[in-house]
Image: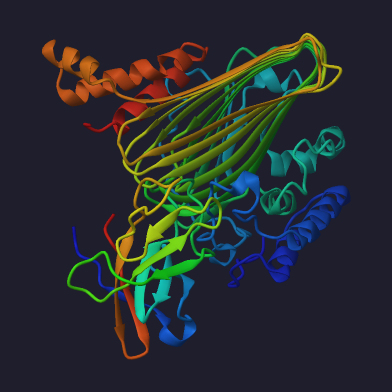
Length: 120
Length: 436
């Protein structure tokens, strides 16, 4: 399967820190998350009931679960039932979600945010 | 017909041109204009509405489509699955909501039966059709899509069977859409008192992976003592957005058997309602769904008992593979006066992959106190022991899976009384099933 390329999705000035923004990338709805200076991209789908995540609250916790990085733990909460998802990996962090949502690769070049869609 | 406008989207300019290109009675033009105003007033549905909460249409954009004012260049009609090997009483074909061919056996036309393009027949028999039209089984203001269909329907199918006429040959309507095209079909079936008919409607894309927009409606009027068998096979290309409102009204002592096959489209949102409006009316609803890829099919069914001593029986069965999703929301509504109602609804789902998802939400709303209303729902995977057993008997894994899937659907196939429909659905599903 061919690897998809990075696609310009938004301008850095469009998303406050912490905050999120819904974008459409190649016929897919993606929520861009800006937290503690980092950018993340997740499918705009809560795996609990399929609702959108994009109006959800972004939370940053001090410290990191991931070794050898300075990235703080960041989650976005589904506005319907409160399920939280890890912004970096898409993993379900709290009930009622039990399955990960899809995470996409992000890079920032200048003031432009680019997203490479996952094949999932 | 005027030339196609370059403008895309559903603008006042395109609507005015659409209306000007039509030769219709004033009452119909007025109804279209009122519906158009409603379309512009209504907002797009959002996931905050319960009915749309599990169906995300944010990627659907009206401005990517345009009203099909001019007839399309000749398109290649795909194979009509339901009509194979069947002696038909009449046939109607449309491409992108423009009628291209059709005919009704003289045997039936002599008895006053009308069948074919609604466009043509409403112009020729406006006075006869108007009262049925104005019953508005599908409410114009139900949502933005019902309003759009009421304003801009074209092509479409009409079946009118006069009092007491019993048609013993099926009638077949095929609606075809070209890639990127639009189908705004409206189907109106009217069976007067004591009439009988079988009508098979089928939709398909000229390209199996083609895109497009279907915004349609179906209205079935089954008068006192009449019997209708109606089949609707949705087999659009995998890129089509399918929005439909479907409503049947069944009068006293009348009978409706309504079978739905849902195989195609990228996303389908369908409201299928039946109203039992006279005593002793009977309705049987059969649904067969098969989804694959990233398809999303959402069916909202509603069995509304408005009169006493009626019976309704709904069975929807779906098989899902890949990352596809189905949503079925069923409601049995029994009015206060509808005593001695006997109503049932059931939805079964067979999960052929771990990444597919089926949401099954049955519901009851009962205001009478002497009724029998029940419902059930099951979702499960293919049993590994059944697979193993079949393979020890010499079947390949894929053959075994196909056999199990066919067996799963057999319960609903057994209820379908038209052989060509059973065979067409079985063949279409068999072709889609892949090895687990």
